[in-house]
Length: 387
Image (cartoon, rainbow, N blue to C red; front, side, top):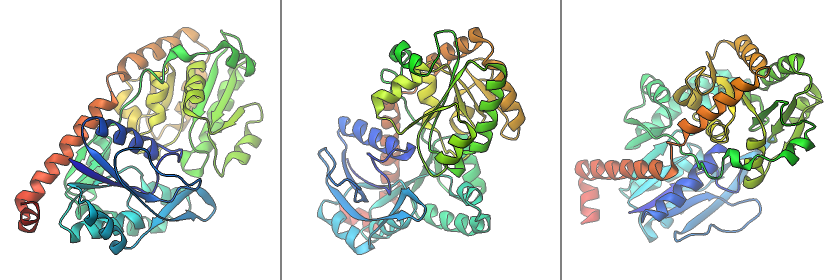
């Protein structure tokens, strides 16, 4: 099989979409799938390593948020790239200008398109004060996804929500975790000493973009509630973004690391004790599975990955999305009981290790084959092209 992935973000970008796509491409290539990529030109230049081809298009950073970008290309430009070595399936990972141009190009060539739902754009409209664009955005997304053979989402709740919104042919593709990379084995006493704590003092950790959509005001409230009952605890915030300065002012005692490379990130997870995540904007949330695999007790809302993976009180604490005060209370209560957060962390790792990237990639490959077979069965033009 030959696959072309179209995305407005790719490694070395630091976000969940880029991480997921890079890992899927790696696993698929090991399963005999040749992966081509269409993406914006990376800031630092360079090309992908691997067997597939690559088309780099013009990159346009979003005003005021340079870490987020869109890709600009004409359908004709992408069509010429696809015609050189036609893929069996085009996977549209993002729904921006690049994804739309690729959808037009693929449909003109009779190539089946499968779409991914990696970002909750309607939620972002609310977070950035443009809620009035929400209904328009939803109409566009409905048009975009209903022009594809299949849409893949990470959770059952998201699949149900999209079906209610009028998006057809939705299936669930979860996310995987590398349990060797994210592991309690990487815990370092020396790193904890840098944070000013010993083995029996709790460390609360947050990992993610520092931006409005991450509900950071509640993160501040939760961290302050924890510090009130455990003044000796450390609080570590990994990530960067437009809200960093404001967050540093609100949490002057916290350790801010900025973005970290993968080995350093794994050590930070393993050297903490409690992972606090207040965001409701995720479609999945790879940081939840990374924290669980690292043996941390997770305190989060019952949303996206935590709703799928956490049984409240057994392998983490998962609060109703409407109970902000309850999340703060749960975090403050947990940090006072080392035996409890250790127990939750052990159970979290055992459960999440069942989600391997190899298995997720195999399921993804089956979805692609299913979409291709359905497309061929209902498209005479496609049957002629492939004969």
